[in-house]
Length: 269
Image (cartoon, rainbow, N blue to C red; front, top):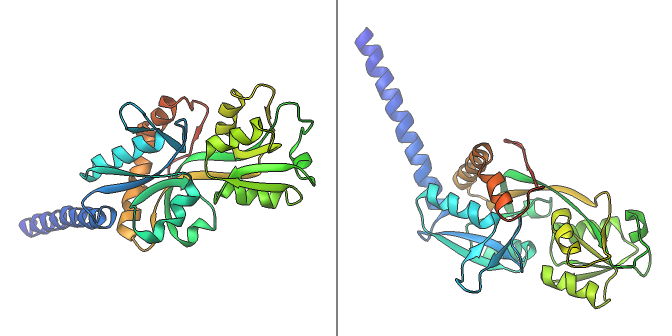
């Protein structure tokens, strides 16, 4: 009887190991159908929690999303290929093209229609930066006729701003560099963007100020195209491990985003 139990236990253990291997193999087929892990990244002038930047000398991308994508590819055992876009809206718009396999973008309900979100790893708040010399001091004062708000096209922040400030004029641009240009050239009165990014922008615009409060509270999460359950389970597990191991915190700190808040493990998107 004891031999039978031992034999049964060995079979169960073997099935468990084989099952895990099968799950990993299926995840790899779903995550890297071309043999490479193609990570879609938003590229701007400076690296941060959301945006990556390209080194002019080496041609290499760097930023928090880049480090997470590289770690995911290493865990998966696949080479990494970065697919750059100007912003997260362009990344989401390209999902049906099949040009990328995984990405890291802010969560909102509109995006859930085409993306399957894994674990969030960063808590985000979007708000406004107002131009130097502006008398606007509160979020409510931004929502006035004639106030010009510039934001990045196709983003959750732009959608939130149009809801929070319907009386204002909204101007959509391709990327972060244009946000600063519009303020400097007096083409806009306020920028709608993530608080961390706005704090960095404020250092380049003496006299500007970042308003208290937020127009959007959301999370930054890993995502894959819908209908890929094995891929989704794999990236969810990867992010949970990356949070627990401190990888996410180090990736933020390495790009100077030391005040960015790491999400707790297991948070739902």
